[in-house]
Image (tube, rainbow, N blue to C red; front, side, top):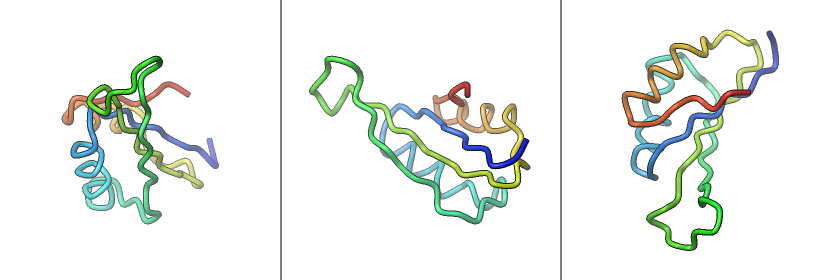
Amino acid sequence: MTDARHVLVLPDRDAAEEVAEELPDRFGVTEEPQLVRDALAGEDDAEDAQWLVVIEDPTGRLDAVSLDEFAAEHEGWLEAP
């Protein structure tokens, strides 16, 4: 698989920022991951927003199971493609 994109779903901004900071050390990610606020449908309250960490994986070298386990350490998960 090449030119993949992985999306980690995290419970809040702090968790998303922490994950983004750890990605280079844990997985050797060289591109800056994109952080995206994802408000839950019908909710205006910022407390109900999840955060997404979008990781570009142009060489397809990142392991989805490892990414999912990493996200789980921060109460998140890897979104299925």
